[in-house]
Image (cartoon, rainbow, N blue to C red; front, side, top):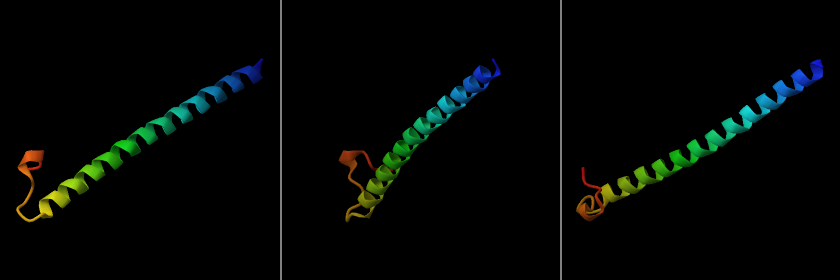
Length: 59
């Protein structure tokens, strides 16, 4: 009987670990997208004439 309790706890912990990995992947994707956006804005700010107001990058 005790083995089933241990097995249940193991399954719960394993599921929680996979859920955490899923959250980490989502957060990495969000961070990469935000960093790409920031890099794009930095490049736009360095162009001659400043940022392009038509793209909404003006401060």
